[in-house]
Amino acid sequence: MTRHAVLAFLCCAAYASAADTYAAERGRMVRDQIQARGIRDARVIKAMLETPRHLFVPPASVSLAYMDQPAPIGYGATISQPYIVARMTELLDVKPEHQVLEIGTGSGFQAAILAQLAKRVCSIEIEPELATAASERLRRLGYSNVVVRQGDGYQGWPEPVQFDRIILTAAPPRIPDALVRQLAAGGRMVAPVGEGWDQKLVILDKDRNGATRTRAAEAVIFVPMRPK
Ligand code: SAH
Image (cartoon, rainbow, N blue to C red):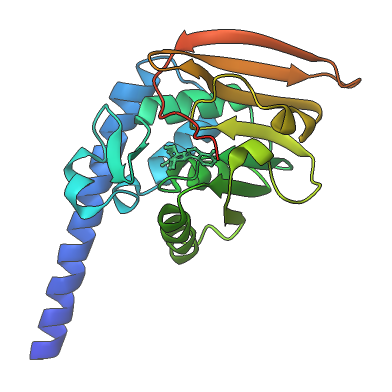
């Protein structure tokens, strides 16, 4: 082997073993944090296994990427705990033909999970730096069916689109009317709703005639959805 070939081999081996380490961590995360708590949806589990979460956190938080907790991503935002991402995604019940709206892009991790389950994902982030970074990250990693816009989620997507599914990853005090209007008939929204420590996951279903019904699930803690 020439010196270059040896170097190339060593680099590849180092890269592969780092990738293997993270794949092993992801496998443990899915088994111990997600399946052990009752998540069964095979598509959700596959997406959680295949999404490189360590590439969605800043260097200072990489050691937290696969731990059973949220991790800071700057600007007062956090990437949600892996179980919460899986739980909300399972509740959302995303089908391959769906158009999905996310409020609170943050790192782009939840959007990347949704991108593997849906036809198209639109995501709104209020913090310009986070919106730009997430948009570039998702493009670089090849999630080509995600569109990120900087903006205020309370206003909904700035085009007259009806979404089959809407997910909020920041907590408003009440479900915003503009988002209910953007939910298609037969659609579902999953959102953390409430103030301070008093938040619950809410599932809102809109029937074929446009009537809505909500039910609350477990208590959660999300960053507040900021008013403009
Ligand atoms: N889904 C993200 C985590 C989001 S943290 C992930 O996978 O990493 C919540 C995010 O909501 C933060 O980035 C915050 O800046 C954003 N946010 C807060 N209020 C908002 C609003 N009114 N509209 C859009 N985004 C908002």
